[in-house]
Length: 195
Image 1: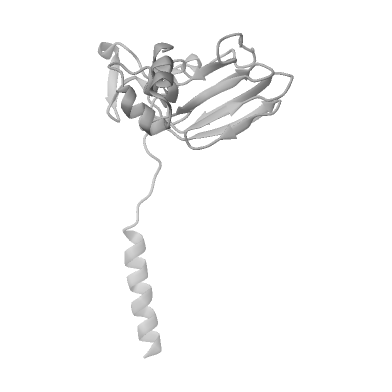
Image 2: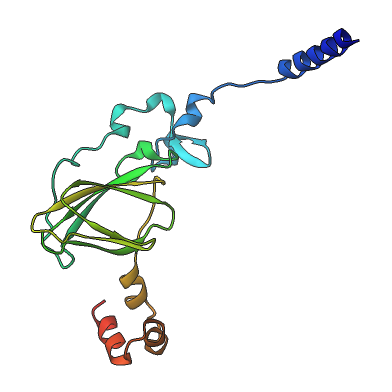
């Protein structure tokens, strides 16, 4: 009787495993090099893409991350984005990165968020203070700092919080902002005038 149960279980297992099917997707779906001219393209994964047979190494290449940028601006930082706009081969891969250079003594990447991505920051040189979900980075040291941000989207976008709040068009009512930030209305109006 036990032998019959064993054979029945073996038969069901063999039947179930014969229905299993697995394979890698077509290479055409593994990458989608973005192009601007839809006449020279194929339509894959909802995007206009270059025919995979015509993709070249240049579609996946960017140079310049080894070169520091000028940080003598109002915030003391410079961002070099590397997303689908710079590397068309990143389209649909869900990744991008950026190099951020910080000036010494207070270089700042202002409070911001990425609406279509999460971010991991790796400090390559110097020291940074990193704060919060709506995050910013600050360089407190007397020498420059450099970081690489890895993002979970080929087009992460960025919203600078101060620009969105104080520089919006049409402007947000100063009474609302003074209550939200617990500031005097004259300070809010002064901040709005700077954007």
